[in-house]
Length: 260
Image (cartoon, rainbow, N blue to C red; front, side, top):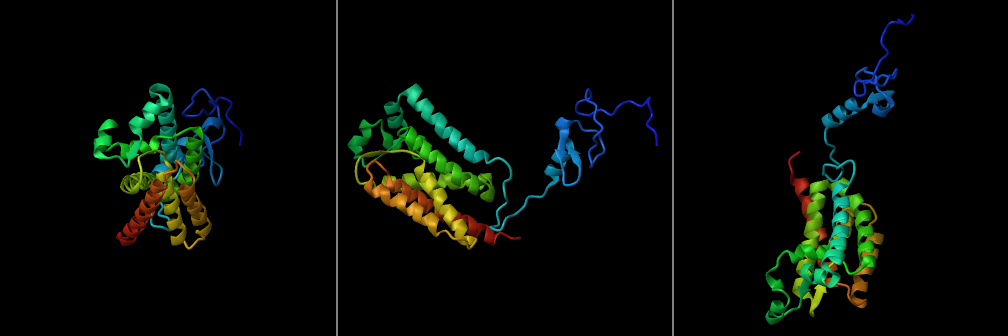
Protein backbone atom coordinates (compact mmCIF):
# COMPACT_ATOMS: atom_id res chain seq x y z
CA UNK A 1 0.00 0.00 0.00
CA UNK A 2 1.42 3.40 -0.95
CA UNK A 3 0.62 6.71 0.66
CA UNK A 4 -1.09 9.43 -1.32
CA UNK A 5 1.41 12.26 -1.72
CA UNK A 6 -1.45 14.68 -2.24
CA UNK A 7 -3.23 13.80 0.98
CA UNK A 8 -3.12 16.39 3.77
CA UNK A 9 -1.03 15.54 6.80
CA UNK A 10 -3.14 14.53 9.84
CA UNK A 11 -3.43 17.28 12.42
CA UNK A 12 -4.53 17.28 16.04
CA UNK A 13 -8.19 18.43 16.40
CA UNK A 14 -7.33 20.46 19.51
CA UNK A 15 -4.22 21.98 17.93
CA UNK A 16 -4.77 22.20 14.12
CA UNK A 17 -1.31 23.66 13.59
CA UNK A 18 0.39 20.46 14.82
CA UNK A 19 0.90 17.42 12.63
CA UNK A 20 0.58 14.07 14.38
CA UNK A 21 0.67 10.54 12.99
CA UNK A 22 -0.22 9.06 16.41
CA UNK A 23 -3.92 8.29 16.70
CA UNK A 24 -6.13 7.75 19.73
CA UNK A 25 -6.92 4.07 20.27
CA UNK A 26 -10.49 4.95 21.24
CA UNK A 27 -11.72 7.52 18.72
CA UNK A 28 -9.04 7.20 16.02
CA UNK A 29 -8.34 10.93 15.80
CA UNK A 30 -4.76 12.25 15.60
CA UNK A 31 -3.34 13.42 18.93
CA UNK A 32 -0.32 15.67 19.32
CA UNK A 33 2.15 14.99 22.16
CA UNK A 34 0.38 17.52 24.43
CA UNK A 35 -2.97 15.73 23.97
CA UNK A 36 -1.67 12.18 24.27
CA UNK A 37 -2.42 10.17 27.42
CA UNK A 38 -0.91 6.72 28.04
CA UNK A 39 -3.54 3.95 28.19
CA UNK A 40 -3.38 0.27 29.02
CA UNK A 41 -3.03 -0.33 25.30
CA UNK A 42 -1.57 2.43 23.15
CA UNK A 43 -2.44 6.12 23.45
CA UNK A 44 -5.72 7.92 24.04
CA UNK A 45 -6.49 11.57 23.46
CA UNK A 46 -7.28 13.89 26.35
CA UNK A 47 -10.94 14.22 25.27
CA UNK A 48 -11.52 10.46 25.43
CA UNK A 49 -9.81 10.23 28.81
CA UNK A 50 -12.07 12.95 30.22
CA UNK A 51 -15.18 11.33 28.74
CA UNK A 52 -14.25 7.98 30.27
CA UNK A 53 -13.64 9.62 33.63
CA UNK A 54 -17.04 11.32 33.57
CA UNK A 55 -18.75 8.00 32.86
CA UNK A 56 -16.85 6.07 35.52
CA UNK A 57 -19.11 4.79 38.27
CA UNK A 58 -18.09 5.82 41.79
CA UNK A 59 -16.25 3.08 43.64
CA UNK A 60 -17.38 2.17 47.15
CA UNK A 61 -14.49 1.07 49.36
CA UNK A 62 -14.43 -1.61 52.06
CA UNK A 63 -15.80 0.79 54.66
CA UNK A 64 -18.85 1.58 52.55
CA UNK A 65 -17.78 5.11 51.63
CA UNK A 66 -17.50 6.49 48.12
CA UNK A 67 -13.80 7.06 47.54
CA UNK A 68 -12.52 10.48 46.50
CA UNK A 69 -9.86 10.27 43.81
CA UNK A 70 -7.35 12.88 42.83
CA UNK A 71 -6.01 15.81 44.80
CA UNK A 72 -7.14 16.02 48.48
CA UNK A 73 -8.54 19.51 48.04
CA UNK A 74 -10.11 19.79 51.50
CA UNK A 75 -6.85 18.93 53.26
CA UNK A 76 -4.86 21.36 51.15
CA UNK A 77 -7.56 23.99 51.59
CA UNK A 78 -7.47 23.68 55.39
CA UNK A 79 -3.69 23.98 55.39
CA UNK A 80 -3.91 27.06 53.17
CA UNK A 81 -6.55 28.64 55.42
CA UNK A 82 -4.42 28.10 58.51
CA UNK A 83 -1.36 29.61 56.86
CA UNK A 84 -3.34 32.57 55.47
CA UNK A 85 -4.94 33.16 58.87
CA UNK A 86 -1.51 33.22 60.50
CA UNK A 87 -0.10 35.64 57.95
CA UNK A 88 -3.15 37.89 58.14
CA UNK A 89 -3.22 37.84 61.94
CA UNK A 90 0.44 38.51 62.52
CA UNK A 91 0.94 41.03 59.72
CA UNK A 92 -2.35 42.87 59.26
CA UNK A 93 -3.86 42.70 62.77
CA UNK A 94 -0.88 42.21 65.02
CA UNK A 95 -0.26 38.96 66.86
CA UNK A 96 -1.72 39.90 70.25
CA UNK A 97 -4.80 41.59 68.78
CA UNK A 98 -5.44 38.67 66.42
CA UNK A 99 -5.12 36.02 69.11
CA UNK A 100 -7.39 37.97 71.45
CA UNK A 101 -10.00 38.54 68.71
CA UNK A 102 -10.05 34.99 67.28
CA UNK A 103 -9.00 32.78 70.19
CA UNK A 104 -11.28 30.94 72.60
CA UNK A 105 -11.28 32.39 76.11
CA UNK A 106 -12.17 29.92 78.89
CA UNK A 107 -12.48 30.08 82.64
CA UNK A 108 -13.79 33.65 82.68
CA UNK A 109 -16.43 34.94 85.07
CA UNK A 110 -19.33 36.99 83.68
CA UNK A 111 -17.56 40.19 84.76
CA UNK A 112 -14.34 39.09 83.08
CA UNK A 113 -16.19 38.17 79.89
CA UNK A 114 -17.22 41.80 79.52
CA UNK A 115 -13.55 42.85 79.69
CA UNK A 116 -12.69 40.63 76.71
CA UNK A 117 -15.02 42.11 74.08
CA UNK A 118 -18.03 40.17 75.35
CA UNK A 119 -16.48 36.93 74.14
CA UNK A 120 -19.23 34.87 75.73
CA UNK A 121 -21.59 35.94 72.94
CA UNK A 122 -19.11 35.44 70.11
CA UNK A 123 -19.93 31.88 69.09
CA UNK A 124 -17.66 32.02 66.06
CA UNK A 125 -14.65 31.68 68.38
CA UNK A 126 -15.39 27.96 68.65
CA UNK A 127 -14.36 27.77 64.98
CA UNK A 128 -11.97 30.71 64.54
CA UNK A 129 -9.82 29.51 67.45
CA UNK A 130 -8.94 26.47 65.37
CA UNK A 131 -7.07 28.78 62.97
CA UNK A 132 -5.11 30.67 65.64
CA UNK A 133 -1.54 29.49 66.26
CA UNK A 134 1.00 30.70 68.78
CA UNK A 135 4.13 30.80 66.66
CA UNK A 136 5.55 29.25 63.51
CA UNK A 137 6.58 26.02 65.27
CA UNK A 138 3.03 25.51 66.53
CA UNK A 139 1.65 26.14 63.05
CA UNK A 140 4.23 23.98 61.28
CA UNK A 141 3.78 20.94 63.53
CA UNK A 142 0.00 21.05 63.25
CA UNK A 143 0.07 21.44 59.47
CA UNK A 144 2.49 18.53 59.12
CA UNK A 145 0.21 16.19 61.06
CA UNK A 146 -2.85 17.54 59.23
CA UNK A 147 -1.17 16.74 55.93
CA UNK A 148 -0.22 13.23 57.06
CA UNK A 149 -3.67 12.20 58.26
CA UNK A 150 -5.73 14.36 55.93
CA UNK A 151 -4.22 12.85 52.80
CA UNK A 152 -5.01 9.40 54.21
CA UNK A 153 -8.56 10.01 55.42
CA UNK A 154 -9.95 12.31 52.72
CA UNK A 155 -9.66 9.74 49.89
CA UNK A 156 -11.29 7.11 52.13
CA UNK A 157 -14.20 9.20 53.41
CA UNK A 158 -14.78 11.51 50.48
CA UNK A 159 -14.41 15.27 50.65
CA UNK A 160 -17.76 16.13 52.25
CA UNK A 161 -17.47 13.54 55.03
CA UNK A 162 -13.87 14.49 55.71
CA UNK A 163 -14.81 18.17 56.03
CA UNK A 164 -17.66 17.22 58.39
CA UNK A 165 -15.28 15.10 60.49
CA UNK A 166 -12.80 17.97 60.77
CA UNK A 167 -15.51 20.45 61.77
CA UNK A 168 -17.03 18.07 64.33
CA UNK A 169 -13.61 17.46 65.88
CA UNK A 170 -12.88 21.19 66.01
CA UNK A 171 -16.19 21.92 67.72
CA UNK A 172 -15.70 19.00 70.12
CA UNK A 173 -12.35 20.38 71.20
CA UNK A 174 -13.82 23.84 71.76
CA UNK A 175 -16.75 22.39 73.73
CA UNK A 176 -14.62 20.40 76.17
CA UNK A 177 -12.17 23.29 76.59
CA UNK A 178 -15.08 25.59 77.43
CA UNK A 179 -16.61 23.13 79.90
CA UNK A 180 -13.63 21.89 81.88
CA UNK A 181 -10.75 24.35 81.45
CA UNK A 182 -9.86 25.04 85.11
CA UNK A 183 -8.41 28.54 84.79
CA UNK A 184 -8.50 31.63 82.63
CA UNK A 185 -6.78 30.75 79.37
CA UNK A 186 -6.77 31.59 75.67
CA UNK A 187 -7.12 28.46 73.53
CA UNK A 188 -6.16 28.19 69.88
CA UNK A 189 -4.73 25.88 67.25
CA UNK A 190 -5.81 23.09 64.93
CA UNK A 191 -4.60 20.36 67.27
CA UNK A 192 -8.08 19.62 68.65
CA UNK A 193 -9.39 18.90 65.16
CA UNK A 194 -6.22 16.98 64.32
CA UNK A 195 -6.63 14.75 67.37
CA UNK A 196 -10.10 14.03 66.03
CA UNK A 197 -8.57 12.91 62.73
CA UNK A 198 -6.11 10.68 64.57
CA UNK A 199 -8.89 9.08 66.64
CA UNK A 200 -11.02 8.62 63.52
CA UNK A 201 -8.11 6.99 61.73
CA UNK A 202 -7.70 4.58 64.65
CA UNK A 203 -11.39 3.65 64.31
CA UNK A 204 -10.84 3.01 60.58
CA UNK A 205 -7.85 0.75 61.29
CA UNK A 206 -9.86 -1.14 63.90
CA UNK A 207 -12.76 -1.58 61.48
CA UNK A 208 -10.38 -2.97 58.85
CA UNK A 209 -8.79 -5.26 61.49
CA UNK A 210 -5.43 -3.55 61.11
CA UNK A 211 -3.02 -2.79 63.93
CA UNK A 212 -3.89 0.55 65.48
CA UNK A 213 -2.04 0.21 68.78
CA UNK A 214 1.06 2.16 67.75
CA UNK A 215 -1.13 5.01 66.53
CA UNK A 216 -3.05 5.14 69.81
CA UNK A 217 0.21 4.96 71.76
CA UNK A 218 1.61 7.98 69.92
CA UNK A 219 -1.61 9.95 70.29
CA UNK A 220 -1.84 8.99 73.97
CA UNK A 221 1.72 10.18 74.54
CA UNK A 222 0.92 13.58 73.05
CA UNK A 223 -2.25 13.74 75.13
CA UNK A 224 -0.34 12.96 78.34
CA UNK A 225 2.28 15.58 77.48
CA UNK A 226 -0.53 18.10 77.50
CA UNK A 227 -0.88 17.54 81.24
CA UNK A 228 2.85 18.09 81.82
CA UNK A 229 3.95 20.77 79.37
CA UNK A 230 2.47 24.20 80.14
CA UNK A 231 0.41 26.16 77.62
CA UNK A 232 -0.95 23.04 75.88
CA UNK A 233 -4.72 22.64 75.84
CA UNK A 234 -5.18 18.99 76.74
CA UNK A 235 -8.89 19.73 77.08
CA UNK A 236 -9.07 20.64 73.39
CA UNK A 237 -7.07 17.54 72.46
CA UNK A 238 -9.34 15.29 74.51
CA UNK A 239 -12.53 16.85 73.19
CA UNK A 240 -11.35 16.66 69.60
CA UNK A 241 -10.33 13.00 69.94
CA UNK A 242 -13.66 12.00 71.47
CA UNK A 243 -15.65 13.96 68.87
CA UNK A 244 -13.60 12.52 66.01
CA UNK A 245 -14.01 8.93 67.19
CA UNK A 246 -17.75 9.33 67.77
CA UNK A 247 -18.25 11.02 64.41
CA UNK A 248 -16.42 8.22 62.60
CA UNK A 249 -18.41 5.56 64.45
CA UNK A 250 -21.63 7.36 63.49
CA UNK A 251 -20.57 7.50 59.84
CA UNK A 252 -19.72 3.80 59.80
CA UNK A 253 -23.03 2.96 61.48
CA UNK A 254 -24.93 5.01 58.89
CA UNK A 255 -23.31 3.35 55.87
CA UNK A 256 -23.90 -0.11 57.38
CA UNK A 257 -27.61 0.62 57.75
CA UNK A 258 -27.93 2.27 54.35
CA UNK A 259 -29.79 0.10 51.82
CA UNK A 260 -27.55 -1.42 49.17
